Image (cartoon, rainbow, N blue to C red):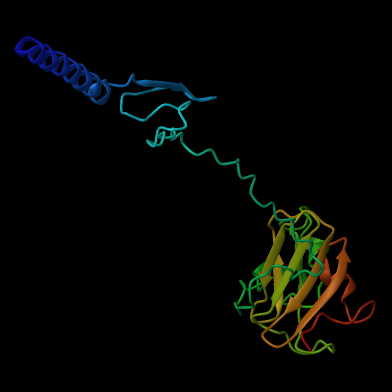
Length: 220
């Protein structure tokens, strides 16, 4: 009887030890490192316990890979070019300036008067009789052409988007030798008045605005 009891105890102890060994083995068995390869990304070796993707009973979430975000290339916004409808399209606000004086001793010698007002400037300033000008003329306070208007802006604006502004001197005369390709829209303005003209083929302003063919240029 004593021998039978001892046998039962040994069998029970052996079974208990085997059960504990199985439980401990299931608890401490390390999981294999996960190796995943994302499309378009390098291989990620993750040695943390992240679970098994194919085990739906495993509560441990799988850590997703974190590739750098890829944003589409921004082509930007292309603004259409500004189409000038007058000589002052896109121009800054008017600011009065006094241009360089056109009074020259050469004018006295050629014209008998240092002030070349009302004269067709490009008739002489064509590279032969005098320095070549792009444009030149006179702006008056009224269309009668009795008093020159100082500090007036005269502006040309071409079809290719370039613009040229000059300012009248104390006698109302203006001129420029800057390179500029005609034809161009033209206009004059001061602080209170703006007059615009259609496309002009020449910068010889006084050639037309002579009081006969056309009224004098003015800010009236």
